[in-house]
Image (cartoon, rainbow, N blue to C red):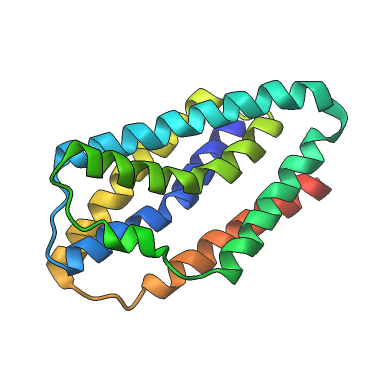
Length: 179
């Protein structure tokens, strides 16, 4: 069950990455394989580190960590709903020509995984699985979003990505609080 939860979290966290792929594709910018792999590795690594740190910290507070983790999921979902705008720093990263710019974009996108990774660590979800799933999901989300936008240049469904993601995080938080 925890592996399925880790998979769901990784997909939801990286739906915003699809927006970046779409935005770059609409501008006619193709995300190359090497850049996407670098971004995915950074996302996965940041997720693993965050979960492991969270598990170490939560081991000292075992009696409140499940509730705190569930609350963080819930609050992160509410935060996403309240701030349904793409971060301007992400939009400005159009050129993925250098490793430095790619790494910077990867770090910016990896920030999305930190709050859920903290929650996942508190709930005892395996950080290695979550990191792997987040890296793969990041790679797929950016690549698919970029290819879709390059092919169609249509953004009709984009407005539903953030509310869907936020709603699912709220449901995960509520589920862990009450069940």
